[in-house]
Length: 174
Image (cartoon, rainbow, N blue to C red; front, side, top):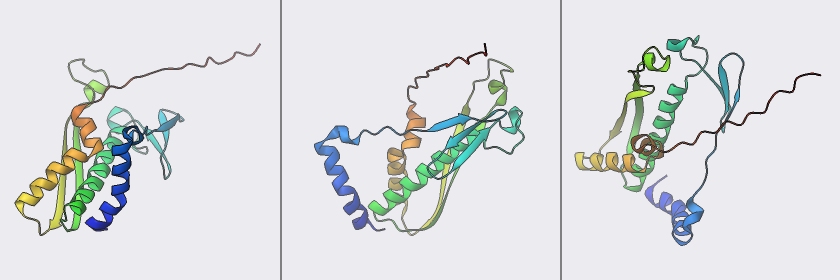
């Protein structure tokens, strides 16, 4: 896809969102079902993924860790965003890879100490690309990729999350 083709595809969407701003607000959804043992089966668009405990918290390593999934979502979003931005600003990327790594201290997750926070303490996102773009173009690509990557911006800015528990009591046999 080139810049002209991308603009052609996106132009009607942009116009629609300008003329009807509420049409741009879409709710994405994810669903999981509690699995056997300590696991959760996530329905993705393409398949079902089963998540479980990381080996550092007692898992056996056969199920995907949700922390890995978070980093994978960041890599996927950043990679697609970078390609779209590069296409739009006409930077030819011949080849590329995106890497994310994050540091976790599992003492927090396991409640070993309350002084250690639960969650990632740092995440590093790196791109390795093959391109003839100059330093200024790469700096612009970086800036725009960060600006328009949904997962990156959500992690950087944070977002309020509401949690609800809806219990359906099990009926006891009479």
